[in-house]
Image (cartoon, rainbow, N blue to C red; front, side, top):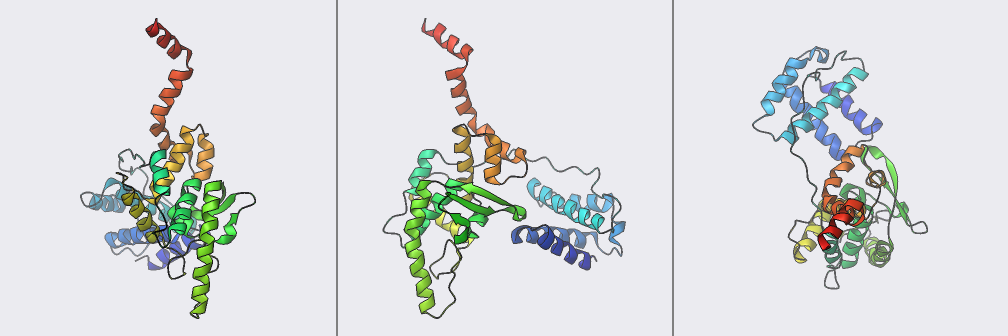
Amino acid sequence: MGADELTAFINWLTVEKGYSPHTVSGYHRDVREFLETVGPVTDLGQIGGQEVQRFVASLYGTNASASVARKLSALRTFFRFLSRVGILDHDPLAGIANPRLARYIPTFLTVDEVFTLLEEPGPQDRFGDRDRALMELMYSTGMRVSEIVSRNMADLDFESMVVTVRGKGNKERIVPFGNAAAEALGRWFKQREGLIMGRLSRGQAAEKEALFLNSRGTRLTARSVERIIRGYGERAGIATTVTPHALRHSFATHLLEMGADLRVVQELLGHVSLSTTQKYTHINMDHLNRVYDQAHPLASRKTDNNQS
């Protein structure tokens, strides 16, 4: 039931909406689960709130609230598509509330921890130059792991010191990077050229476009990046499990601590909604309190009174 509509939906997400393969795969899985739970319905236009309520009820107890919310988001997009193509003339999700989610607190590193992490790759590491360049660029730009592994050499502009990033929904943004990242990339490019030449010498097609390569001379994967960064974090003795997303969170948090405008950080991160970026603001309460104590006249008066 709904196999043709589901296929059309997946094509719409991929071609017209430009969603990432990971997102498309998740939506496909969630919508298919719903259709299998609903059972035999000859016309998707007949689906109403009762079917959705039964599906949601079946999820509780075996799924976390975040998973239920994600599945409802997939269904909401699916129903929007069905309405768009004239199959649905109502919203089966009307009146069905999303589960309450616990407040998400991003994991981030201190500035000192970031510096310790970045200095960890050394001569003893076969791909130390690559790994240093990788982490420097991630911290300098706040890119997602999926974004950095899909970057090509042509995306870098060393004259303007910016990188072109294509994020969720294939939306493009321009993000600056610093001198430390540029210098680290220059060192990596020498080893990168050697990997390409070695691949050509073996009669294999060379991966000339990819920015970061693995030991075989092919594009580095997101899973490999996660393993690399976690390994350096453990070796550096950082108590927090260091992930690519932790570097992204650190990028945003440190910018805000230094006084960056929230909307600027939103643009750099590629967030569609400002509310997504605002989750970082609570992290900076200690910083804001310090600024208040230093700058607010009442705070100064209180200090003066205490001293007198």
